[in-house]
Length: 99
View 1 (tube, rainbow, N blue to C red):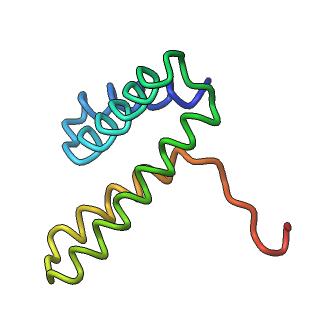
View 2: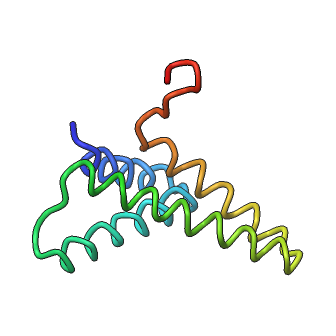
């Protein structure tokens, strides 16, 4: 099963479970994937979907640093939760020993 299909299945599961943070996060990333496909004029492959996921994680990390400067703990917690959800769908990173 490819990554996009697993995201769509997770979206359905989140709808059934009424898990708002997972639902919102996966909707945002699927929207970003569709936007990227429209901009490129073709469907994204696995590497393209992974790149979109990494971009979304980077965006949330930047939001966390801005929220820390503003001392907004609620935004920091929300960004951490979204990052944790998105990282589940990324391929496993190699450790230093494996390199």
